[in-house]
Length: 124
Image (cartoon, rainbow, N blue to C red; front, side, top):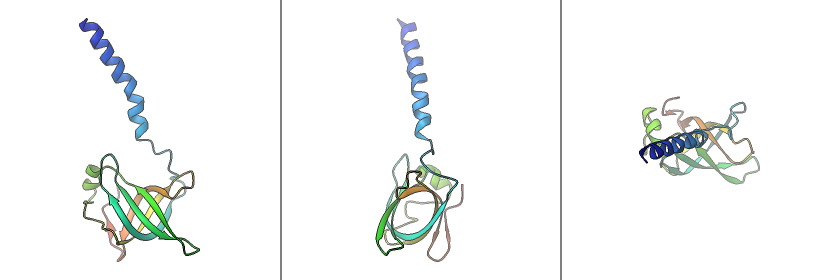
């Protein structure tokens, strides 16, 4: 009986491996076409497993659009100098990011600067 339980446990761990690795895939982002946009922070979300910056960006035709930009987990961001209080709603920031491959209004943050040109956090 004990052998069956150990075998079952090993199978479960091996089966979960590819699923856990797939979660960390960045395939949805296009690192070959980085974008830089300036906008206003609408909201900062600081949960695990990823933090997000919701930003309002004025398009070329003057329409305000919301962009959702993904960041790392809070513990990784803290090591890079970010804090939950680094950004507040209403802050103007410029963000360089890898855009979504599907053309959606989102991406993965690479670096960010405040309105006065101060870098936010440190590059990874």
